[in-house]
Every structure is written in C-alpha cells, then in structure tokens.
Length: 310
Image (cartoon, rainbow, N blue to C red; front, side, top):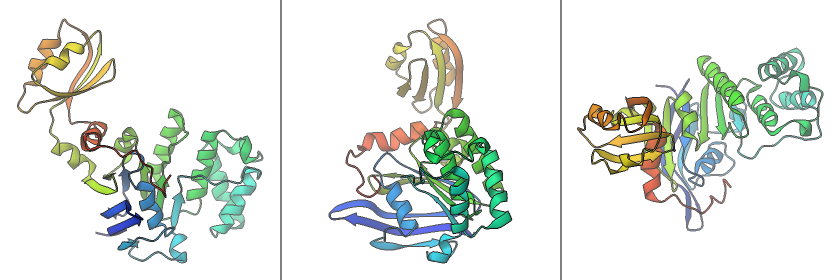
C-alpha cells in the first residue's frame, strides 16, 4: 500500500513534559484521516513535527515516501491552528500574492482564484480588505490559500473553527471532492460529529500517547451493537435505574444508552412505552463521541496546555 504519511515512534519533550510520546501511524493515499483528542493532547505538536516546524526528539516521519524538505513543502497544503492572513490586503490581491508563492502565475493563478472564490461564495468580496470579512469568511479564505496550488497532501488543524452549519457542510463537501480526486486529507479536531461524516481512519491521542487507531468502521464494530439512540419527550430519569443499562449520555431530550452484554433491546423498549413519548428508538453501534468519552473521559483529560500547540 502507498502511504501519504508514515509516522514511526516520534516523541517530543519540553523539559520533563511529553507533548507527544512514541506516536506511530500510517495514512494511505487518497483517504481522509482524523487526528483526534482533547485539547492539549498533542495533535498540533504532531502536525508541526510533520511540517518540520519543530523537530522530533526521536522517531521518523516520511511524507509521500520521502523526508521533508523545501521541495516537498510545495506538495503539501497546510492550514495551521493559528491563522495568518494580511488584514489590510484586498482578498484578490492576497490570493494572487500567495498563489505566486506557491508557483502559480498568470492565467493559471487567476483561474484557480476565481474558481475557489465562486466555490466558497466569496466572489463579491474579492475587492474587500481581509479585515472586512467575518471570522467564517476568513476561515474559508484561509482554506483557499491552503489548497490553491492543488497539493497532494492536505493537513488541516481544526478546519471547521468559526464556520456555521451551512459552511461546515460546504467545507465537508469540498474535502470529499478532493478525496475523490486522489488527494489525502489529514485533519485534527476534538469535534467527533465532523469525523464521523468524512473520515476513513482515525488516531485518538490522549496525554501525548496514542490510545486508539485504525479504520473508523471497524473500530465502531468492535464496540458491538448494544447502543440505543433514544429521542424522547418527558421525564426519562427513571431509565438510569434500569439494571440492563451500563451507562447513559443524557442530553435532555436525547439519550445514547449503552446496554450491558446480552440484554434484549426490545425488553428495554417495552419498559419505556407509556412512560415517555418516544420519537425515535434505534439500536446501533455507539457513536464516535461515546467511544471518545469512554476512552478519554475516564482517564483524566489533562488540564495543562501543550506548550507548543497552544
């Protein structure tokens, strides 16, 4: 299998503090890969080591089967966590300037710029200064800057930050289109619903170490099909006392209920009928959010911030 990114046993320390510890994973070409974890887990530090912004204390990194160098950077699109746009420049002028830095000039640059501005509904803002754009618009502009040179590997650090639901869907659609064209996309996030929409494979990091990695569908199957999604109206607090229930994530009018092994899911349904108004009762694999909480929540998410990524 051809890999877009191969990370083997990389570590990064700051004094006695491990920001990343013995981390390994491989990302096949043409896939979408989610680098997950709570705030401060080491996601951004990992990405910065991939981009050669900081150097690992140990381990190795291969990108498109090569070591990172200046020529390799031209084949990568990188959206950093800390955004960097020139606020006083006009949108069109900024894109021309940054496209030229990526090797695009003349007709080719204008063609790409016009395509992306139209794709992200920013054509009418071409002559406006960057500082006049909303936070969400600036986020879309930053994404355009990241992909305008058609990179083979695209690395996005929290790409959905500042986007409303409509533009989140738009960016998700664009990412899937790029995957369809053979691009490889790596993105970090702590928002699980975005990962379930688009990722083929994931790596979950907590407290600098990998705690879960692999194909997303296979990971969910490992947790069995003993989760109930319950959409309801009324007072459902009594469900917590049921002996069949192992744990509940309760959101007020929505519950994700994990049952103990070998429990009859229909028996639980019968115990609910007549006591609450049931809008939806679905037996399914657990959500990635529930798996995330189970793997991370019970192990003490660290409060200190990663000295590099924050």
